[in-house]
Length: 398
Ligand SMILES: *Cc1c(COP(=O)(O)O)cnc(C)c1O
Image 1 (tube, rainbow, N blue to C red):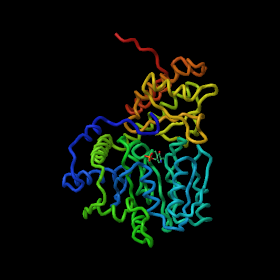
Image 2: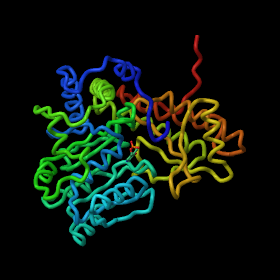
Image 3: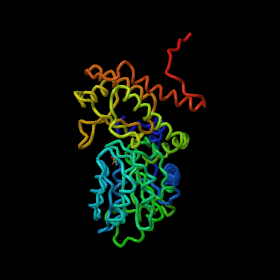
Image 4: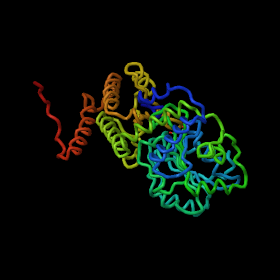
């Protein structure tokens, strides 16, 4: 229950034990087609260049930067956390003139501020993170997309921690270059970075005056392997592609609305439980991610002791803060296969017990589990079309 890798469905694990095929075998080519079709569905796009880069989420980030930036291009990076900083650093190494628009960690961007920065700096590229895993924020996409949807701007969005967890409509929002990672809400092992490009981004590729400095991540070549031409570029990680294909099938079976609903519900139940326990969330309600929850560590409680306790006693991993948030927050992931009611209950019960033993006087006495159960009960009664059930009364069985 950290910020990834998340747990993997046994179906996905089994798919990886299938026999090895050549990267140009006709059967593997069908696997590639399935992967691309499945990715188009989760990204919500029809884009021809929608494929998994061989590498982790950061390889997706790097692919975006080196293919979209030409030396000297002004790149506006909206930075409010660790991963946005990484974007800025890579953009700079790719030859971009980086301008940062900053918000304090834990906050999201207002469209009006982005508009002002765009008018002032006239960037060719604007980059932002959807779910910032270092802080637990979820940047509302639509308002930014409205400001950025212009012919002269390429918009790059990082959704490593949110694809297949929170609603993302790439085509509907006119996003140009969007990348993710396999090991978070897609619930695959790490090692693939799905990307998708708009027509505008594809045009930018062919208009380049300088070739992409990275041979391995050059999309002009890679696209030929991932299209009908099928020109060898590098050996695809075969087993990881089996895994991604199976994970995408599972997502399709669940359907996107159900999937988003599940992530939202488990997040709300977790937060209700944490707050009932007497803990405080780091991010304001409106800006909270569903896939990654940041909660403040109460005074007098040792960060590491709690995490070690959870891991030793229950095999639960949660993670501490990055950078300035080290020692100040815990980061609790509810991603993909890991986003389920049992995990929420187990963590809340275990945390309440541990904190109680350490002398933390919060809600206590099972308040956390009661609050979480209340959230689930309300959701169930809404689904069944009946009024929410009032506070529970003990039910006698038999
Ligand atoms: C995890 C993550 C990354 C980096 O992905 P790796 O797979 O670790 O390379 C980038 N951006 C965000 C928002 C992430 O959560």
